[in-house]
Image (spheres, rainbow, N blue to C red):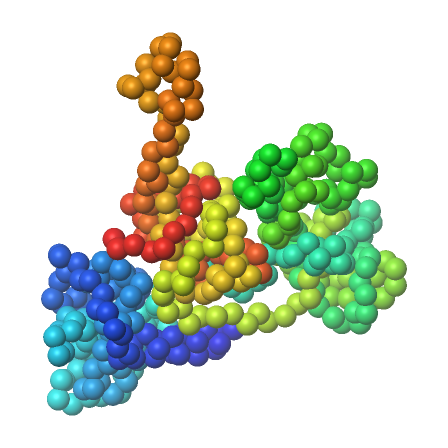
Length: 399
């Protein structure tokens, strides 16, 4: 895994620092510096944000310095300078401790190189499966019992599994536990089927059934689930296990687990995930309809920069890695008590006209780093205020 990350980072940096030119020049910040010394913890987004109003446009102004033997990597201590070539702004890199006239081989470790984005903040979301479809949930093997009729299982203990399919002795699986289900449902089920919203609710085994499993005490919840479209299930990978004996149920040996294994946990085939680290930020061709923030990846009410958020649109909607969107908080709907004073006849006879929706407020930018069919993960790159659930996404705007 480490080798793959290093190789991918080299490719990323090469792409980002290529001297590609575009038709339009990105706007510079009025307070941009002429030079900047790279520090530990910087990312290319951070550095570009010091020079550009739109930091996701960094590939348009990075210029490979021909005096550097290997211009594809930037390290702490390097000096970034703003220069003009044929009247167009470019950023050039002068490595620290090297002569401008005599390039030398860089000896720094690749791990020390400046990353395009803060990979440490998203790596855990890349190395493990995070979202499963309804079909994958329905067909997944599940733990039906534990050794010695235990309530929870631990490393080195046995678990008993059904629906294992054609697995063989020795096959490895990841033990996963669904935590949330995302469902796209009509907001007004009968009156306006075109107005849809995304509902996030805890997952329960058998929750899609009217009888058996978990009962639906609120009838409208059951109606929404039956009338809506499942976008996916958030899962937590809690450990790995291998098949030790076939049968119905089959026997699994818990190799390790971070959280206690329970009845009802699912099995996902173990595999080294291939993920995309070539995050070259760019604006999307368009914004999918009603694209919103539907969840955070921790027990938070709001998040800021370098936090991961879940969005209710994915690959089928044209969402792809590297796309940058602006986040907006929807405007509050209030009563105009100036033109329509409280208890006035004007308000009484014009209840609809007395209400007004305030303009949406800009929050910040998010970059997509992992997509699924109907959902995607994004990293908040910058923000002027916290991001909340149901904030909407729009085309990126200048800072």
